[in-house]
Image 1 (tube, one colour):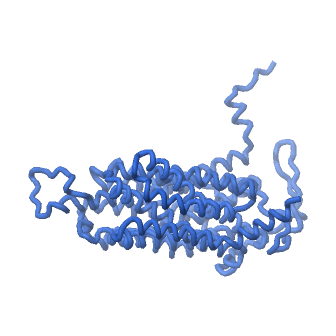
Image 2 (tube, rainbow, N blue to C red):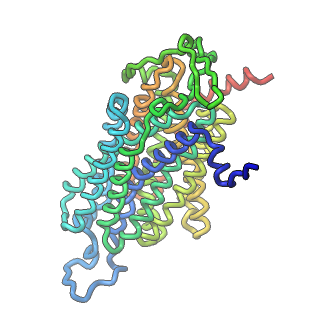
Image 3 (cartoon, one colour):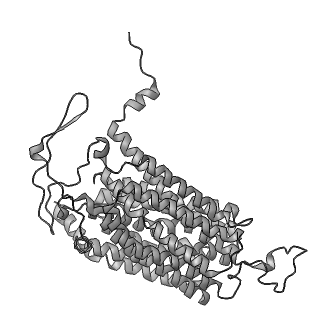
Amino acid sequence: MKSPLAPGIRLLTSFSRDGCYRGFILFLTFLFYTAYHLSRKPISIVKGELHRNCSTVIRPADLNITNNETWCDWAPFDQDNYQTLFGILDNCFLVAYAIGMFFSGIFGERLPLRYYLSFGMMMSGIFTCLFGLGFYLKIHSIYYYAVIQVFNGIMQTTGWPAVVACVGNWFGKGKRGFIMGVWNSHTSVGNILGSLIAGAFVSSAWGLSFIVPGLIIASTGVLCFFFLVEKPEDVNCTTPHRHREQKSSETEPLLQNSSHIDRTANGAINVEPSEVTVEPTEAISFCEALSIPGVVEFSLCLLFAKLVSYTFLYWLPLYISNVAHFDAKEAGDMSTLFDVGGIVGGITAGLVSDYTGGRATTCCFMLIAAAPMLFLYNYIGQRSIGATVGMLLLCGGLVNGPYALITTAVSADLGTHESLRGNSRALSTVTAIIDGTGSVGAAVGPLLAGLISPTGWNNVFYMLISADLLACLFLTRLVYKEAQGWCRRSP
């Protein structure tokens, strides 16, 4: 009599070969983009250390100083224009990122993703470490740090189009909103880990706040080179069905023949060659990608949604430090709650949009709800620890939910739109256009915060609320179309 299999083995054998590969790719790309965001976060944590309230710092007895107010600051951030200098550093990174993103998708479609991602992560790690070396080499030139930020911004553009294209190759549309909502939590997880790692060193040696994340992302680049599989067919796995026969108000059905698939007893797949739809192999042009229905609207919406999200990413620790009077480490730790809320918001947005089929409506609802929450956070968010925690979680969910949905599920949906006639190579370009447009907002937001914050934090929040409402405005046509579709389906 054959003995029963051990429970652990039964669990392992219950997964198909395709399922194991998909899970592995999802985990691997999650790890990669966590490292990308982890390496971006230190600058926002270190700001509070580069310019401090020196009157509250115990001065070493053997230190001969001439200015009691700035003796503990790091030049050149010891001047009254320190917020402007921080804004310059943010924008050197973000403007380079925004410009580079439009070209990154084009390169991503034409180069092997494994090589492209590996190169980008290792180079980004080098530039992140070089920023931290400024502490040990005692470099006080704003030009040094600005140049490093520019090159790091360019290298960081290699990440997003490539990982979204890779995940889009492995997963169909069925539960894309939920799957990518969970997967997109890498953004918040990376921000949280980046804050904690940078915070661990910021008070003692802020250079390590950059060097350690730099080494981490460089290591994941090596991991990518050895283990990433770009497409299911590369390892003889089943390609997901992305395109179904369906009528659309904007396009007619384009794929009339579906592949006839039979599974043999051993799980192999037989495909009848005569019925396979041949996918176009040429990458689409920039203008062709723009003509896909919904790309322009979602791109402009993301511009303002990302403006709000990245202003929080780069300025929230400093805001908490100034308003709640926390030190740099405590403010950094508290700011991670915004990203915890972002994880829940991204998953919720994906679930709701999968269930309702309304990507634009889900984004619009969350953006509208975010506006009054931002107003309340500014006025009551710092009155107590409980209020701070609750408002950060709520604002994080409502702000990052639409941002996460647009950059993942929406980008993948549009990059595999039926008007493309099955051209999977369009995904990287579409993703780059949407995220590149959003990155313009990501560059403008921190810049405006740096210029406006000297006039008062209230004005910064009014700017964020205005951007939030403008993001909703660009989705009105798509929301109307989705509502029309629901009315037609209702009995």
